[in-house]
Image (cartoon, rainbow, N blue to C red; front, side, top):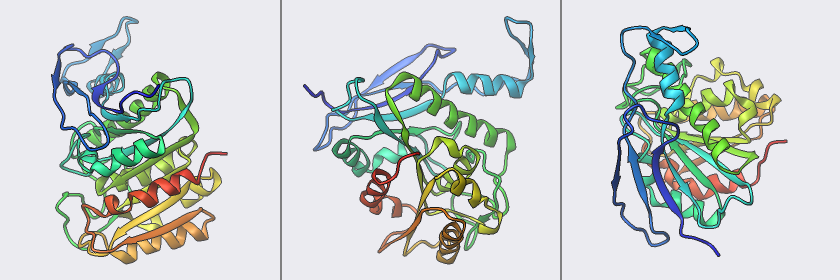
Length: 295
């Protein structure tokens, strides 16, 4: 007997405050959504901390430890999941100025995940402006509203903790749920696209395929060989009305990925801009993921 699909906003691990607040979520035509919210871990203090093993941690190490133990994320679990069979997982990275709730504002994400049987997780990248660890140069037509530099993403500490948050979320979800390790996928839009490209190259063994939308690193700086050598497929998504990410930059990524031996595809979404191209491409994205698994 199947249960109703569930949309959760939560942290895994023990919070320092232990404060949990429940709130009601809107219901959709396809599922009754249940949510709970836990406070975001406090940011690093300026003092050092001594662990039980007498190891002194710097403020940066303490912050990383806290983020790793209590990453905040939102998850969709389809009604057919009961833990007895492994399910594919999609990790979605939000854009700058947003949080883990933003991807689920597009109802199509949960609807397609329910229809196709995917667990979907959207981590908070430590805060709303961190860059998921990427330091790749970014190609933009002009200073975009997300505030990302055309050279590198600023604030190295938050940027590093952002990567820790995503990878810690992935690790804990894989421990807590029955995830098919050969079918783990990564997508992101805006800043999340830059993060997806970075995390795919740095941790290529984790992903079967990626789908970066509305955000391009410079192709000359990117190690496509890491994707090719580890059989990570790539679906590049561009809105035809995107004023921030140049179409030729995305085409360059696609072409160089293909030349490097990556199983790559490019989608140009009609009448879509920097904020919604990923939504228009969701059906093709899930189809692309369904056709790729790790081997």
